[in-house]
Image 1: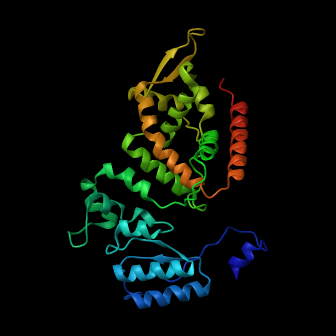
Image 2 (image 1 turned 120 degrees about the vertical axis):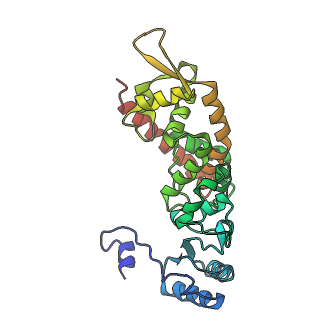
Image 3 (image 1 turned 90 degrees about the vertical axis):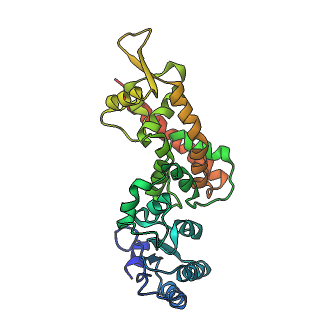
Length: 301
């Protein structure tokens, strides 16, 4: 089997994950059919079950119970009869195309009229105040490791792209973006605010900020122009060298950072809770070394 040969490194290639035939309203019209399909796909060696629209709530519940009992994950679309709340509670491995999110944010329910392709017709009814709450409910692994170790590991490099559930780094960025959405910050702007908070009242020159960023912005000057216009940072010429313009965090920028500290810390804790304390300390040291190397090799001149 190709997947096994890849895992044994007999041939060069990516890690291969496979799903079985689709679970949808036609292929799985009732709970017993769904149960049979789950058992068959688990026995066949598939990595996960793929869900498409059309499943009834009863059929989905049987699928989820059976999948949990035999240890196979499921992912894909969120059937209208299931809804996002049930999908999150059931711990989808991933939700395709943010399916169900617009409907949930707009308060839509089946029978309430057409919602359009992925909720397109509901866009003007979305309650953005619910975004952060939904982001916090995305199920991640929890094992109750010490918060201070997690904070040390994350703060060492601002590593917001560590994988959620250990296998999909893009989901961590997605969750962070959802947390930032109510503040109007991009992930890059959030990174700048954290860098300036760490710099203290002395502030940093524009190029110094650029050297410390996780993702380099090709036009850091314009980025900081926009942040200054929002009142998040303030810039002034240095007292010792008038040629140098330094940026500092404003009270408004600090307020937003403080508001985000708890939910972002919780996100990082949930991302890293699966690691033992010894490995967290090792991760913290490695990230510190990586950051130091970046800062010493990036010249602000």
